[in-house]
Image (cartoon, rainbow, N blue to C red; front, top):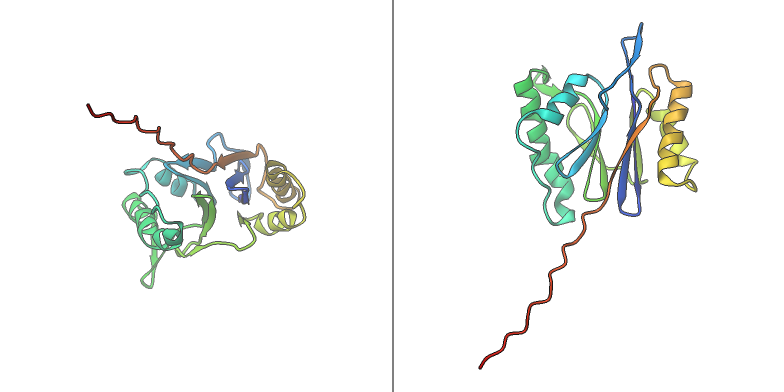
Length: 196
């Protein structure tokens, strides 16, 4: 039971998460965060905490995205998802039914873009500049749609608060990470050469 919310704002991508774990009978607040940074990515996870733990800690860092942003979706659908699948397979949580592999869904951001990875590893990218996953996703999406005049962190917080109000198993504290665009390295001007 979770709500993960993502939002793009002026080149920054924000992902926020609640902190509740639930088994439909009991609910408790997690110390570990459902949203985290690894390499040049931030991610927010629903589903089994083991899924998140493997992506946080297992293996080498995720492959770096291509320089051309036009190739980013293809890269995530192929190279990056295969990195995730291999980690899940070696960690023993990749489910296979009738030859189809599955795990859980999550949000991932890199290079100023926000993607939604579904349980069958398809990679989507919303055209509206925001997205949500988890049991509170529909409430959060409605909140994000109606809060376009708010500052971005306030929008994320309000969407999570709405999910907390209306969805069992979503609760505080809310945690938000921001991924800013990489700063371009400025090359110092070369010293003039002189010949004698």
